[in-house]
Every structure is written in structure tokens, then in C-alpha cells.
Amino acid sequence: MQVKSFEEYHQAYQQSVEQPEQFWENIANNFQWRKKWDKVLEWNFKEPKVEWFKGAKLNITENCLDRHLENNADTPAIIWEPNDPTEDHRVLTYRQLHDKVCQFANVLKNNGAKKGDRICIYMPMVPELAIAVLACARIGAVHSVVFGGFSAQSIADRIKDAECNIIVTADGSYRGTKEVPLKSVIDDALVQCPSIKRVIVLTRSHTPVSMIKGRDVWWEDEIKKVETQGNPECEPEEMDAEDMLFILYTSGSTGKPKGVVHTCGGYMVYTGYTFSNAFQYQPGEIYFCTADIGWITGHSYIAYGPLSQGATVVMFEGIPTWPNAGRFWDIVEKFKVNILYTAPTAIRSLMSFGDDVIKGKDLSSLRKLGSVGEPINEEAWHWFDEKIGHGKCPIVDTWWQTETGGFMISPIANVTPTKPGYATLPLPGVQPVLVDENGKEIEGNGVSGNLCIKFPWPGMLRTTYGDHERCRQTYFAAYENLYFTGDGCLRDEEGYYRITGRVDDVLNVSGHRIGTAEVENAINMHSSVVESAVVGYPHDIKGQGVYAFVVSPEKHGDEELTRKDIIMTVSRIIGPIAKPDKIQFVSGLPKTRSGKIMRRILRKIAEGDTSNLGDTSTLLDPAVVDEIKAGAM
Ligand code: WTA
Image (cartoon, rainbow, N blue to C red; front, top):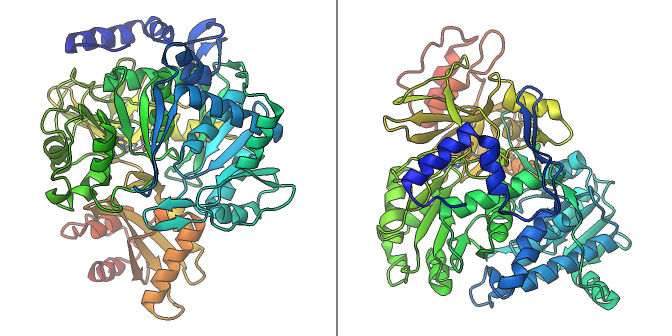
């Protein structure tokens, strides 16, 4: 599946455009199917309807686990590094991971789970998280993983939307010096979720938790039951290629987060292919992805992609800055990591600690570096290249999204010449186009526009759970017959792509997607807030910070306390990841006569660029702009 030269890349790319079905059929033949497809692709972007490998039968875990047992049973699948470096790390070989997945799959079955059920997973970054995910896939249940930084309210919203009947969680999780009481958060969420019949709780932090008879059970007890039943195997459920594999919620420019739906066949082929090709993964290489499984990067490039390729994955529970900012480099040294895949926000944060924390660390095992989540600024790119890669590791800057399932525009390691700040060229099978405001394709090089994709790829989302119309509206209605990414993009003279950031009301804070509308709704729930407007502003480490303009004429207590109350409210409603960095109290928001908030003006003020605010004459009350300008933080 790997192209070995730039020439081969161009050939593969051309074939993928001219004969896409043949191209993907060849790739798909590298996987294990119970039955092959009747048709490679059927699609239209109008409804939208996209079906890959229709009629094929498979189970993705057979590809991620069973098929490696014959020759690679003893190859480490997961090397797990705990939060606390003095605690022992764990290694699970493919044989061991297989057995544990089967065991837990049987636990799920014992607890009433069946094919098609939705199962919510809210867990720390421990191997059992990967095991739970794969166990769902094993029995054909649909997992909905919720990142550990979301609040009870956010979890409840997601559980209700997907009508989950089981939750898998843990007593608590560790993040640096902090302990997050996961089960207690779940208990708060469950007050609103009658659909949940069973909560399976893993012991991790030994935090005291409430356990409700008939509903809550311990992971370890359930495993013991399975052991005494003496059924170690769990036959993989036979799935149709287009059966649902998982739901993952993500933020958009309007309303509540949407449940992005991925299906079994296409997602497996796409994540496996892109992982193998972009990183040029070689057997035996140690691959470390610093993401959390709660995000798409963890789904596609800790769990499914690498495991389907028989790779060895390092999974890390902690944070990059604890016990000190050398933690990543210690892990690289400890496990002789060959491929390191991380995010610009982590790179910038580690950069800020200076070079002392890298001194003396042996990074010589590194061969390839990767970046994901947001545009990587040139300074961070060069630091990563020089200080970490010692100038000899290609930087694979992968542009993609929850919705795309896998890498879309990305260099291929040691094949595509890289360029700082550029995701470079589309991978074979990906047909990007830039369009102007009216949806007209902008051809040629040295141009920029809104990034769209004009042909389906196997890893793309199929729908948004429970609301297909929303999927159409969000991604396929802006421009006819195109998938709209929400990103702005530049194509330089050489045809290289550089993602310039979101063009919609979605913020990218430390690589996390946050909808401004969501944050506004949360702020507005605070009892003394009348209304608010949230925009992003450039932040040295986070990429973007959250700037809230808040109308709150009658504050409770002093201004500073009200600020803290508002932050607390956002934490409760969404989670700590969405907390505003700055809150400016204003007497009113700049609105047009029709009542529309002029975000353009607020964005400029938040960016500290007030020299030219453009035309403000259409505002209902132009004076409010001067007041906001004067009070800017
Ligand atoms: C941004 C994360 C520039 C982009 C995999 C996209 C990037 C959003 C890059 C998706 C990159 C991701 N360069 N921008 N290499 N990778 N983005 O769904 O704005 O959490 O639309 O998926 O992150 O975020 P999501």
C-alpha cells in the first residue's frame, strides 16, 4: 500500500483519480474480509449517500487482532506509559490484546449488549480504553467515546442523542497532579439518562465511588465471571461494510455537537492505508501518538489504523509537562520511539520551556515526526525539525477532520518534499478543490479559497447520528456536489496546500474543536448574563484562545467573581476545555439593524487590531464599538 518515490506517488494519485474504484479495490484487497463486496462505490453528494464496499462482510477487529496472531502474536501491540513515571509501564502483545478484547466483549454480552447497541465510553488513557473500544467493535456494538474533559451535561447530551444503554467508565483518572473523578461525573450525567441500564466501572485511581445495585458493576468482577464461565474466545460478529462502527461527537458552527458516524469497511481501509502510507510504517517500528482516544486522532491513529497494520503503538496516560516538560522525550528514549505523532499546541508549549529539558535526552531513535490538529506555525515546525528531529526526520503535517476519518492532505514520509507550514499534497484518492464564496472552483496555483472535496473517499462520514438532514446541511449544502470542510486554504505556486484555519464559527483551542455558539449558549445560562458573543484570538500556546464579550448589567458580587462564576458555568455545561480565556463585560454587542451580531468587528477587537474595523455605519448603535474598543483586554 506504500508508495516508495515521488514518482510512484504521482502515478498512484493519477490512478486514484482516473480509476478510483479500481484503485480502492486494490487497497482493500490488503485487508481480511469474510466476503468481498458486490460493488466498490455508490454515491451522490446530494442526499448525501456514500457506500463503499457494499455487500462485503467483515469484522474490523479480525483485521486489527486475529490476523496478526499467526506470525506476530508476540509483537507488542500497545506499550502503555502511565501518568506517574514511577509506576510500571505495561506491554500488551497482539495475543494478549486479542484475549483481553475477547474477554471484555464477553463481559459486554453478559451485560446485555448486542449488535447495533450504542455504548458510551468515558475512560482514562489506559489500555482498557482501547480494549473497550475494540470489544464493542468485536460484538458489533457502536461505541461513542466521550473525551475525559467533558462535563456531566455534555455526556448526558451525547448519551441521550445516541440512546446509549451501557456506559464503560473508571473510578477516576490521573492527569499530571490532578485526579478527575470520572464515575462521579457519570453519576451526575445519569440523573438525566434513563436509557442507561448498566455502568461498567474500571478501577484506576481507587477514588471512592458510589455503586448502585442493579446498575453499576466493577470491570474486574465481570472479567472474573467470564473467566469462571471458561469462554475465553469471542467470535467476531459478522458486519456489513456499511454497518455503523462508531459515533464521535464534534462541534460545528451551530447548535449542539453532532454525532459523526463512521462505518466498518471504508473506515478500516482508509485508516489502515493512510497510516501505512503517510508514515511509511515498517514492521518493528515503535510509533507514539500523543493524542487521547477520546478524539478522532486516537480512534484512527492509536486504535484502528496502526493495529490493522500490526504496528506497535505507545499509548500515554499523562500530560506533556508533568513531572516536567521533558516527559515526551523521556518516553521517546525509554521505548526507542521511531515515529512521534503530536500536535502543534504541545510543540509550542514544550518549546516555551527552553532547550534545557531536551538536553541529554537520547532522541536518536526518531525517524519520522507527525503533526495534527491545527496549522503548525513555522517557528514550531523548525523547532520540531531541528531540536527533536535533528534535521533528519521528515515532518508529516497531516490535515484531516473527525468527518474525514483519516489523513487527507499530508506528506508521505521520505517521499513528499516537505515545506514548513504546509500539509503539502493530497494523498492518493483525495480530490481537493478550492472554491470562492459563490462555490465557483478556483483553478490554477497561487490561489486561496474555501477547501472542499469533490469525490468520496472510503473514510468519510456517512451521516450525523439521528439527523441525516443536518449532515446534508452542514457539509453538502454550502456548495453543490462538494463536501465542504469548513477550512480556508491556500494553494501555492507549486500546488502545495496550506490550511489557513476555519472559516466558520468553529474555534481550534489547543487542537480541540469548539463551537462559538456552544460556548455562548453555556455563558448565557449564567443567571446574570443577558447575552454574549464568543470569538477566537491568537494565543501563543493554544493556537486560539476563547474571548467572550458578555452583557451582564447586574453582576452578583464583584466583576472578578462574576467572571469566575461564568467560567464555572461553562465548565459545568461543556467542560473545562471550553473555558473562556478572557471575559470582557460590555453594555451591548455590535448589531446590525436586523439584530445580527457583527462578529467581524469583535474578532478584530479580540485580535487587538482596531485600526480598521471596516464599515460600522450599518450598526444599530455605532457608539458601542468605541466602548468595546476602549475596554478590550
Ligand atoms: C484543523 C482533527 C491545519 C482544521 C484531526 C480541521 C488542521 C480541524 C490540521 C479538524 C493540520 C486539523 N493543519 N489545520 N494539519 N489538522 N486541522 O475534527 O481546521 O478535531 O478542520 O480533527 O482541525 O479538527 P478535528
